[in-house]
Image (cartoon, rainbow, N blue to C red; front, top):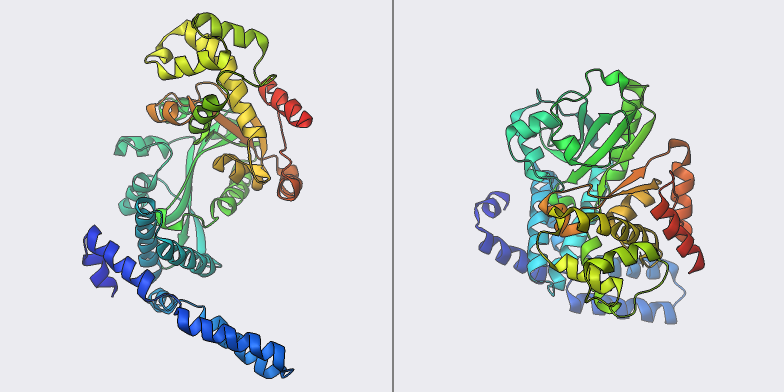
Amino acid sequence: CCTLYESLDNVRRTKFLHTLAHEFCAPKGKAREAATAYVDATKQSEDYAQTAHLARVLRDSLTPQYTELFDQINRLPNGFAFLVHMRADMLSHIRLVRDDTACRAMSDALMKKLETWIIGTLDLMRITWNSPACTIEKLGQYESVHAVKSWLDVKRRLGSSRRCFGFFHRSVPMEPLVFVWVALTDSISSNVQSILRDREPMENEHDAKCAIFYSINSQPGLSGVDLGNFLIKRVVRVLRADLPNISTFCTLSPLPKFRSWLEQWLTEGLTNPPANIVSTQAAKQLMDLVPEATTWTMALKHIMDSRGWTSDQPTLSAMEPVVLALGAHYLVNVKRSNCAFDPVANFHLRNGACLHRVNWRGNSSYNGLRQSLELMCNYNYVLDRIEHNNERYVRDGTIAVSGDDPYIARAMALNAKL
């Protein structure tokens, strides 16, 4: 079955997955009969043994048939890796056909299986330029935050004052399931290009004061499986042991949904912008650049829709306080249920990190402009506050803050009034 699947092209793989999801799901008729028998038994009988038996029958009838196939494949050599890659194919299909609920359910079922099988099977390893070539190649293949352009690019990221750590499954010792890039610096970094293009890193790593986690990636098939949380905490432990001079463990993270949120928000509040998010002075400076605009939101939208504004210094100067204020507001006050709307923010805050600083032009690449108007953010893992921060965030959505970023302070003050 595995060899056959791997020999198929993308179209035939999609057909295979569609058949597996729709034809080998939980049989509706059998599940309906089991449910009826269980309900009748609970109403008419006090025979607990019979009720327990019918409960097991009902549970088995609700278990999709394809889960047995997953269990059998996992027992094969390299079966775990095969299933991770198969789930990546499922997710690709779901992105194209969003209403295929059967395939989505199958993907979720396999995700739960992978989570269970991972427990107790992961080894933390440092990846260096001397690691096997196939392992280094996977770093470039799975890097989804800051694209790897060449082998020289990888070599620089694995060089002096740089680290890369990954979790490896014991059945797939050459292929990291999740990995993190780390830069050792003398201060908290505000720009990722300064890390990626640094040709003169620190000569002595023991002079470093900060460890900057600037990219965390996992294999596509493990989307939804929370490995990054454990990886960061394990890496912090290793770095503290190897380099006791490091006292600050911080990220330099993207805001992947900021621009899409902002564009929608501007459409809704174009003619009547809410008060207090942006200072009066910043709003006036922005409107001075667009005389026909009657509100600062109209001016902002006009500039965002124009070409070349990132090359014009007066425009950049006027945009800086406005975009920083909106970025801080987005991170602090825009929620999904009780959690941060931004997925990266939610990940780090749930892990117990503090919101530290919003960075103007933190990622000046095309992707940084497209996703977040070039904003990046630092999340600070203050070691003696991690558990407390995690408990408060999970309980009531409270966001912990470190540092003295004025834009975050303004957003927090607005949050207190909401």
